[in-house]
Image (cartoon, rainbow, N blue to C red; front, side, top):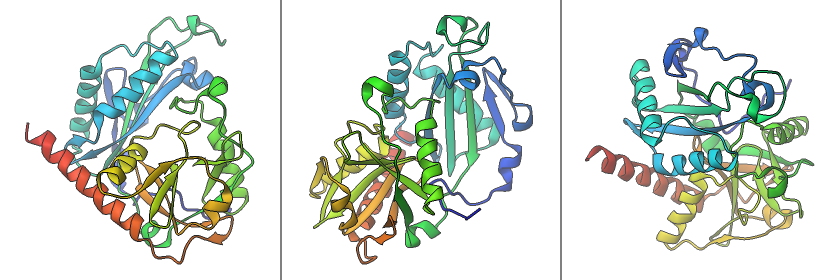
Amino acid sequence: MTDHSTTHDAEEDIRNRDIKIYVNGEIVHRDAAKVSVYDSGFMLGDGIWEGMRLYRGVWAFFDEHMDRFFGSCKAIAMDVGMDRAGIAEALRQTAAANGMTDDVHCRLMLTRGIKDKPFQHPALSTSGPTLVIIMEHSKPVNRLQSAGISLATVPQVRGLPNSQDPKLNSHSKLNCIIACLQAEAAGADEGLMLDPHGFVNTTNACNFFIVRGGAVWTSTGDYCMNGVTRQKVIDLCRANGIPVFEKNFSLYEAYSADEAFLTGTFGAQTPVATIDGKPIGDGDRPVTARLQALYKALIADHVAAKTAR
C-alpha cells in the first residue's frame, strides 16, 4: 500500500502505549478500556464526538467546542448525562491521571449507551449514555508545513442537511471514510469533497480554504462541519484586514488559487501542495503563513487569559 500523509500525522510518542482512558467515570489503562458490543455507538454509530487540544493546561476554545457538542446532542435527543462543568471535570481528571499539560489531543465521545436488543430504535438504549475520553501525547509532524498535503477530488459528496447534516459531529463517519478511501485510491492524502451542487466544500477530515489575490475564500458553510478552527480563521481575517469570503466556488478557482490550506483542531492550518495532481500556486504561501502566526498568537492569548483567572 502506498504511504500517505494525513492532517492527523503526529510524531511517535511511546508514552501513548500506557495512556489511561476515561470510560463512564472510571479511568483505566488503555488495554482495559472497553465498551459493550451492545453499545449504540459500536452497533449503529449513534453518538457525538469532539476533538480538542490542550495547551499549557488549557483546553483551547472549550466553550465553542461545548456549544457544538451540546447542540449536536440536543439535535439528536441524546442525554449527555452531565453539564459542561461535569465534562470539564472529567477532562481534568483524565489529564491529571496521565500527567498531561501540553501537546495533547483529546477525543471526547458520547453514545446513546448500551442497547437492550441489537436493533435500531433509540428507546432500546435504556442504561444511559456512554462517555469515553481518549487523550494522547500528540504533536503534529513538521514535514507537512513545508511539503504540504495532496488532495484528490472524490465522487463522494457532502450530503444535504435533511439527509445527514454535516454539522453533526457524529460517530457515523462512513460518508467521510468512503471519501478518504477514494482519495487513497487516487494516490492522494485526503479527499476534496464537493457539495450536492458541485461546488468545492471540504475534505474528508478538515475544512478547506483557498487564497486568491490576497483574499481568503472558503465554502458557504452550508454542507461542511462547523469547524471551530475554521471560524477562528475567518474571525482572524476580519480582525486583521484580510479579505475573507464564505461563498460558492468551483474546482476552476481552486486549481488556479495562489494558496490553499486546511483547518482543523489537530493540525491548525495545513498547506495544500496539489489538487488532482495540479500544483497550487508557486509554493510561496504568505497569507497561509500569516494566518498560522496569527492563530498561534490567538492560542497564546487565549491560554494566558484562562490561566490568569
